[in-house]
Image 1 (cartoon, helix red, strand yellow):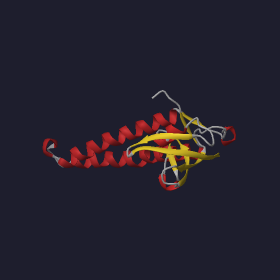
Image 2: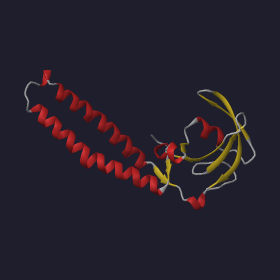
Image 3: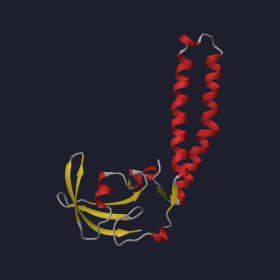
Image 4: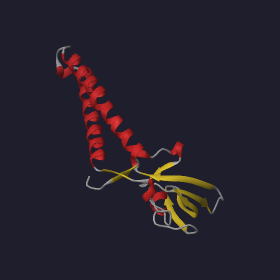
Length: 157
């Protein structure tokens, strides 16, 4: 990964907290599980040992990914956000021109995406289709269900 990851200050704090938990709580727990499984004898037929080693590998991958994300993180100051065109950290109100449904999403980094909070990743088809467009623009966006046409009603912070 050599691309910057643009995050809010709050998003970076959450990532660092999760990284700290994985390194200081989960990693020692898995090491303990491996040691306990190893103490049970023959490793060639020890399913507990194999499962603990696999969990350790997955955990280390997750830790490495989080460390890389934190390393390349850049804090976006809300005061520097432009609302002329859609960009990361903008709140965008859009209207589905076929159904008339109006939706509002905030475009965020992938690590901060949370549909319950109406935060969509900048990597989603909808966000990619809206980036760079102005209020009043119509965007035809290809989603898994086909092509959807949205009108941008407003852009805010």
